[in-house]
Image 1 (tube, helix red, strand yellow):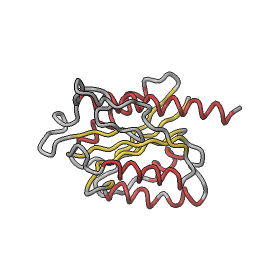
Image 2 (cartoon, rainbow, N blue to C red; image 1 turned 90 degrees about the vertical axis):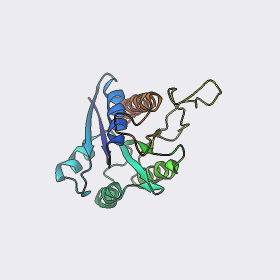
Image 3 (cartoon, one colour; image 1 turned 180 degrees about the vertical axis):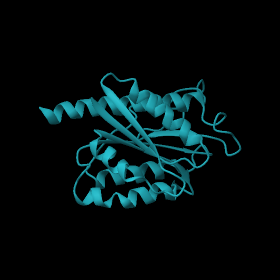
Image 4 (tube, rainbow, N blue to C red; image 1 turned 180 degrees about the horizontal axis):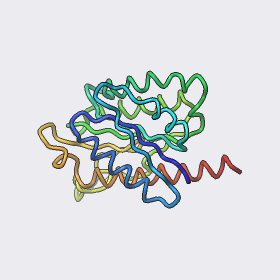
Length: 195
């Protein structure tokens, strides 16, 4: 079985919905098992999480975008991953990322760029969405990749919405498709490494 690990933080619950969609997509791929880890409010993860990540064929990162970057809880996890960096423990694992913010732009790309940089420091293989943007007059929030994320899955959740009211159907479908794409890339990478 190919193993996909999703590790993310969510402050208000909106990013939980996006993580669930990514998980659903990854789990829909035959031969894949998914472990989803929510970073707690204090940013401290259990020791067993490091083992789960070491065993994974793909790691998908997630965080809301706060003030133009990932939440500090995610950053704490990233900083603590320096032990894995020192031993190249995540070398050649597939990587991806997703983020939610309240605004249409909200500098979400800075969070995705942070994830990409983290993955490259670990020697991982980054996977983008592979989805064309829904950017014509006929399109709206209900369409796949209306937010136009190519490097990772992006979602908009208005600041006064509950998690159930938050991200649009299109953003959640984008996240689901992205989860499936990362999982499929992990299978291909695992086969290539084994050959």
